[in-house]
Length: 121
Image: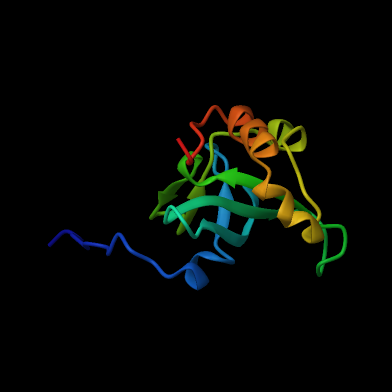
């Protein structure tokens, strides 16, 4: 008998945080540090990915448009079509700079980098 699991399309954000992020080649890039919600529109705006570092030291944070991520059941993680080199050139934040995500000019640059349509349109 084949495995015909039906997964629930809904997930609590606390279960998403900590989930690994991979590129299309299956290379681990980092993990989801935080989910940023637009509380007025009810949209997931960003997944902020932690990248690099060790035990919280030297980590970098990359805001990823939520619609640029695809969940992959076999990896039990999210996939973004991005090489490690592209990630190194991607917009980044420090942990104490998450408020920059409220700036639509910065947000447009993040979405443009990933070729994604901004969530607020």
